[in-house]
Length: 382
Ligand SMILES: *[C@@H]1O[C@H](CO)[C@@H](O)[C@H](O)[C@H]1NC(C)=O
Image (cartoon, rainbow, N blue to C red):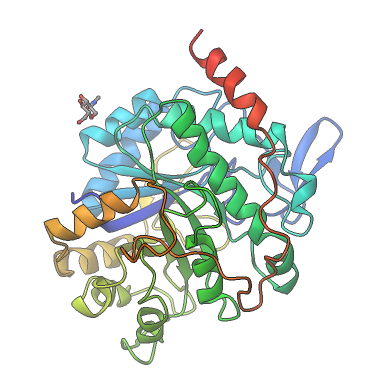
């Protein structure tokens, strides 16, 4: 495994942790997904809390040849030590989303000011405090597809950037390992580059620049080429992004069974100058039919045809060409030094006043939970 390069990755979700996050509503004493109507239960189990299930799945990750997985949400009140050390023993890193579909654990994309508060940030701080202890936590996603239309593109960007700032500040103040903080974006041409550029820019604090960027893209469906798929435009559009960037979801299923032809392109030299691999969506089967494996009620696993196709493509994919000097650059860029105006080191970019289709005119909100960082750190050390 070459740190910073995701040679292959996969997503885990369970019924308790929806991959596609719908609003959650309260009915009686329970939370329900407002679209599927399924109960949202997040107390007893998450994908990294049950050591037997982890062992079962990690065996399959190794069969696939993965080095990184993404998990969309966890419950920080559960114990994740055993699963994380099993993953570490298998040489597998984790990219973890710090949000969850539960009330108080994610931003409202249209009215983010109603949800950016102490309760929300203390959930995030708890997740960070727990997972920063594990060497194989590769990064945190501070948000996933929060911007997904014109309205959210007006309301949410400054709040996403504020959450990223707060996460980085928390790690710094609490003396925790500095884990890279990223954002996972819906690939919409209206803000494909503008959102990346805005989250990348220096707005006034050393902590407000994103450390890496994820792009959720489903544009390679069936038999395509680097050009017919539009991948060449992704490479062109993100060419100037100065931090690591990778596909945080891919795997179009409009043509089934999937052949995962894009895997060869993702790891080819045409792509790897700009993109550090990608995460296939998704490991466990759900109603949306992107699974590589399926479970029965007893927890037995059935490998689906896509499991075998993906494994074959991945085993044939070119080896990552990343060099030691690239890694040194990546490491220095996550170092969080304060840039000076006029410094042309290229490690940072000052924010502009305007970004296409975004509204960033109000600037970043003040930290919602600065006061609790100290009390949080005291609590943690009790
Ligand atoms: C985590 O990494 C540090 C630094 O390399 C090392 O000293 C430590 O032993 C590692 N911890 C585990 C549990 O492997």
